[in-house]
Image (cartoon, rainbow, N blue to C red):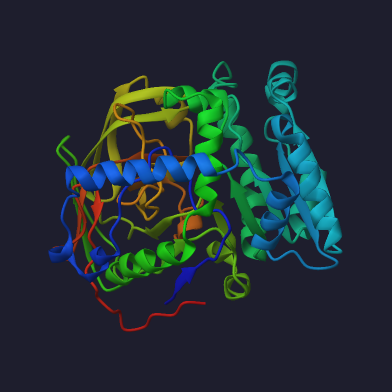
Length: 430
């Protein structure tokens, strides 16, 4: 069993930095809430640091770091993909790939093209597998993608059954790449600076952009330290209990399953391990683990999330014997849920946020899993987290302010990291 540690150049997106004391790694007894003066000083320091940062690094700098993150080698084929919003950056990434002696396959899609594919191509073609995509899945060595999420609700008018059919047809290709150990890095993580995301946080695009790229300088060593402490406690435990003031009360087993630490890069050791070890996400800052199937019991209440581009409020999920038995909330699309495959019913993964440089403006709800102390539970596919559920459908439920206990010992307390220094039997950092 191993803990993955990825070294990366991007750490997390930040809106208003959280205070984080590394003394927390000594155990719960060392934690305390910051004083008012400490909070004010942290805010002032963060504001000054933010002012000193450039709005966005040069595209060739970003491109080189992304190429490094997936260990692009001479002679390899690399798929570079994203939306037309970032066409120049995608082109620079492709050039950086070629500079390494590798061969880029550049795929740039526009909202107009994606929408017209659904509006003007009949449903009888939804289950067809593109032979070019099949060839790529069998031959490429790495994927670099920009998930700008420009129009999250672009396909809300498309019947959920059609979207589910398309996802099902793509699943065998995804499985093939997973088995082949294709290295992949995805930049975005629900915080890419576009208008829709900025509006969600009541920020201008410029403010969000500055905050996003400022977060690229997050201390990677700090992420590794806190991630190792969190992972050690998870790996040493058997059961997890999560509670929150909103009514969340859920328990499940993890039974020493492998823990993955995302610090934004695929290491050589991870590349050799293959499977879930070959996946990296940016912004970084999470420790995640799959849940033992059939063991979850209780209720989850998610105050707010974005589903199919729309806000869902007060989503209530009841889980029995590891399966979702009821799910409902204001704005939730039951049709899209029921159209997915049987794996959608499984409570399948847990993520603990590690990044101390991300928080949300007062009065807004976080929609990403990276803030330090953020707790996220997932429904559906979990192969990326080391599980066996290959369902294309996933639903992430963010639970800010939660308390997480592993075998009764606090891991997160009221939304703040508080890992105990427990050393597992075997702890390997590639």
